[in-house]
Image 1 (spheres, rainbow, N blue to C red):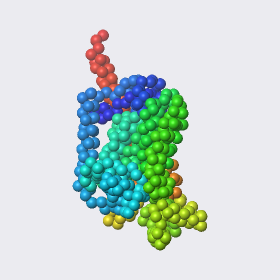
Image 2 (cartoon, rainbow, N blue to C red; image 1 turned 180 degrees about the vertical axis):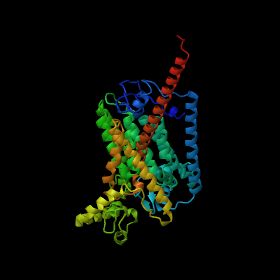
Image 3 (spheres, rainbow, N blue to C red; image 1 turned 45 degrees about the vertical axis):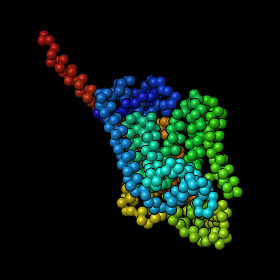
Image 4 (cartoon, rainbow, N blue to C red; image 1 turned 60 degrees about the vertical axis):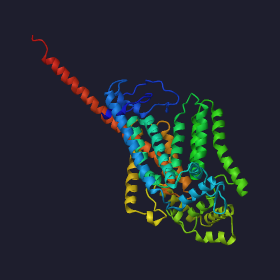
Length: 484
């Protein structure tokens, strides 16, 4: 019955050591991703017979599909129930800060915290919470928004996995993103990382719609630009990621490139310009993203920083100086930034060593939470185990490249995003939570490998059944032949 989940559509495009993959082409609407072929169209299916699918009963296929959907939504509902029951308290300062800003917006005070307007928090997440709060959502209901982002991320991951590796890969990607321990943990908090995850996956999905010789509709460029802006305004450390995707899309967009660039550029810059304009009016300063740039740079580049200290580093000396000088939010941000740069200039060797350590820490499965009550030995074991398994499976996808199963669009982009973010994030500091949206890309790659191996095993099993039936049929014919 599992063979039912291995059906694929798309275009055959390669040859591999697994057999002859032919050059057939099935028409695919423009909105179906990946015009260059997919792993699910590879020769493991053609070994069963050219153009044939693995035999299965339609009823079994429908039953498995319905079961998968039922399980998916049951698990999603379970995570939602836990989030709702635990959402009354906000144990982290960041969570309370987001909610305070959101409620100030709804109350008509404006985008503010404390005594005045702020740009300390990037706007997309507090404004998302504000939209729900304006509808009367309680804190418990607000806690369901990260769960909704998680479910959305899993659905987009399933779609990408389906396009890259077939239904098995699609479902593994969907369940993998839904049940990834770091994702589940974050879904039980009011952090914006899952909003960034669904935004990033949506952006990669847009990239998968590109074809070499045909232009995609204008709405794809518009949607991609808006998603890139949303990514930057949700988690500013991911702003370079959105820029890389748009540059990649521009490079791959062979037809009507100028129109694509114009639409995507306007769509991506307009929301950021609106936010920067608001900051200039409210705070008399040009702040494109947030006023946390300086303090984060200092937390990653000062005398007490270690490769994995993150936000736990002691910068009280600098904070005391800010209070002594009575610096405002923008001036404090500038002071923190200047202090970090001065330290790097004064200690170039130590800064280089620290940067290398932060680069390695980017790939760490686990970082100690700042709040002591959240630390757990079991959580550490789970984190190390799942991340090791994830990266081993994702690396296995690269092993398939050596077996003449090349990376297809947008797999190369996904690897590029995951690896390029390491040196970018290490400029400030690296944390597992900051890398979290990018882990979803590796979950999809791991799912592609598993889907391919499952498909290969099922194809081999089907060939064995076919040979066995052929042998029995031949033997029966020999026994029933006429006597001479």
